Structures are given as structure tokens and as C-alpha cells.
Image (cartoon, rainbow, N blue to C red; front, side, top):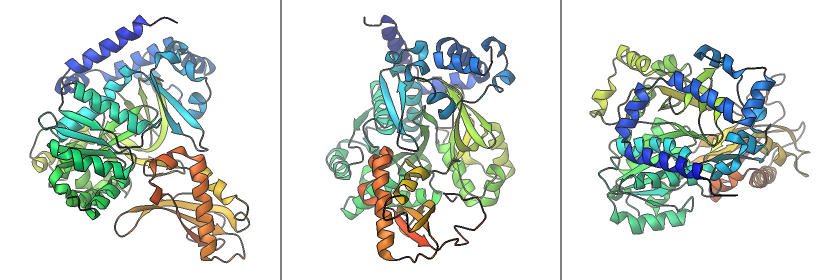
Length: 501
């Protein structure tokens, strides 16, 4: 097999375009582009080049040339892992059926621990890097401040650590005074690099899952680290957190402007970063946190979702039955891919009008126009399936079931349980699993410990995200045993839910 000249040209064009296009120009180009036309163009390009999508359209009796308008596009069948990703060979999901046109593969765990592979090429990373550039430029002013970026996501085949590292290095190549160090989720190594390297930089950015970053900050305080000395910033992904949580962390790191010192990413292994918090979106979310009535009016629920802005020319969002789907280019290009996250889309003008009607001016609150752009908003409550996110790892009911089916355990329980991620008084999180006992079985502490250990063992065995994302000291779940048909958790005659909001 010969070296591909087309791959070299593809890399060079993408690289030069990224390096030579300022963030301001990139955002203006996106805002002035016709996202609807671009998504139709992407559909036709994918229909012409991706064997799996060609087969998918044929099976659904769809002639690609019949899709000419946005209304036509919106009638296309949805893609899911089950009907598309798992159905076709990995190579056929890529353009021309050539897996070798991608240069790396990320892995995410399925509900039974079976991995899903997500190939991509260098050129796919630059649109994701632009989301990081928004954060580092608009929020952290990393164009004028030397910055140590400490990647605290798990490293290896999992998408978070390597993707984040690559994007930060691309920013450094573009000229930002950013230096990247990759201790992963090794707490001892994180403290070592921060203590030794931070004096060389104007600011330090920690990138990781929210509960793990909180653990780092709290443990650092216990070790005598004075976070206020480091001009600390946080980039987070993987979990919804409260504005009370953000305020608590801001207090502990000495942040006086959390709208500019924090940023959360909305991302998936399927397609990288889909959207990101901006100073504007954070400011608006903090308004809603203090005004629950207005929040319920806007989002339709009394709980507060993650709120980010997105570039519709990069990731084109739609909604279906209060869940999100998106289209976007990648190593595996996806058209109307249903990710099953509960949420919705709010156009920029609609958000602005709502805030004006309720007497709130985020510009006056921010006292800065840096990071203000007219991208639309997407809000996310989390996965609609019976899944909880814990330190960024998706915990599935199937994993818990296996723990409850072990010899010596299965005779005690019915198999029903409710899993939740809870917070202690110090706001440290833990995995809570409430289990229904079989009739006439009495709970005791030894039984709780045995069930907790059985679940923990099977989570380690079945769920690679859990094993690699969750710190060792936080992996053992806390189990509570309730009597058969206990009405609050296990009411008789009602369809059971394995998670709680």
C-alpha cells in the first residue's frame, strides 16, 4: 500500500486553514453561513461516499436525490447505535469504506461493556479545537497569559483525555502560549506537576470531570496547596452540576468571576465536543439558578440543565420528543444521529428576548463583550435512558444487574434497584444504589457490604469507563437495602425505573 497523497493534501489544507483563521473570523464565517444549506450538502456528500449510509438509505427506500429541502431532510430516519453503528462493519461507516483514512480510534463502553469504536482523522479535530479556542481565548484570555493546561481526564483509548490533549496542543501550534501536561487522573502526579510547574506560568487550567476536579481541589487544600496563587481555571465535561457547586469551587480556588474562570463542554465519544459554555451562557444559567420560576418557564422542568452555545455549521442540532439529535462531519459522519439526551434548542434571539422580558441584562452583569456571540443555545438534562453519569462514566443498569445475580447475592434480592449519584454535606459525590430485598429477607450490614462489593466487582469487570474514570477511593458504591415493595422506591404494580431525577 502506497503513501496516500490525498491524505497529505487533506491534512495540509485543514492544518493551514486552522492556523491562518482567527477565532473571530471563524465565528463570523459560521454566523454568516447558511447552516441549513450546509447540512443538506453534508447529507448528499455522505450519501455519495459512505457505504453504510448508502445501504441504510436503500433499506429505508430513500433516493438521495429526493432530499432537496430542509423539510425533506427532517423526514430522514434517525440514526442510532443500534440501527447504524452496531449494524454495519466499522470500515463501511467511513468514507469509501476505508478505515485507514482515519488516523486514530477512540473507544466508549456500551451497556454491557462492549466497546464502540469511533475513528477520526486529524482534520476532524480542528472544528473541536475551535470550541477549546473559544474557552481559552474568550474566557481565560490565554492569548496574552502563559498557560499550563493540566489534562486530568483519563488517558488511553477513552475519548476525553487524548482528544483534549490534542486540541490544546493544536492551540499551542497556532501560537497561543499554552503548554500541556498530561498526568491523567493520577492525583499524586497532578499535584507534583502543579507544584513544580505552575510558578513558570501566569495561570493554570485543570481539565477533567467535575467531581474529580473538586476532589483535586479539596485534597490540594488538605495538602497545603494555596490555589489562589495559581490563577486557576477549570474546563469540565461529562456531568451536570449546580451553580451552587460552581460557586463553592470558585470560593475554594479564589475565583471572583466564575463566568470567566469556568467552562463546561457538552461532548460525546460519538462526535467530540458538540457545544461549550461561554461567559454569556454561564451568566444566563446563573440567572436561572436564582430564578427557578423563570427556569421552569424556559426549560419546562424545575431542574436546571447544562446550558451551552453551539455552532450549527459544525454540529447541526434538532429535537425529537424532547430529546436531541445532531448531524456533523467526523471520521464516521453522522446524519440525524439520536443521542437520546433530554434537552432542547433555544435560538439566540429567543433567549435574549426572554431575558429582556424578565429584566435581566447579561451584558451589564458580565461588564465585558469578550466571548459574546450570537450562536444558538442547547440545553441538556442528561441521558434519557436509565443511565447515571459518575465521574464522566456512564453507569448502566445492566452492569448492576450482573452484580445482583452473583451466587450468594441473588437469593437475597428481587433484582430491582434504584441508582443515583448523590452528594454528601461536603458536596463530594458517591454512587448510591438502593436495592429491593426479596420477601421475608431482613437487611443487615454484612449483607449491604457483600452486595456493594459484588456490584463494584462487576462494574470493574464490565465497564471500562468506570474502571478508568472513577477514582479508586470513589468506586465502591453505597448500598441501602429496603423491604420488598417499599412504597417510595419499589411500589407494587408500577413500572420500575432504575434511576431517579
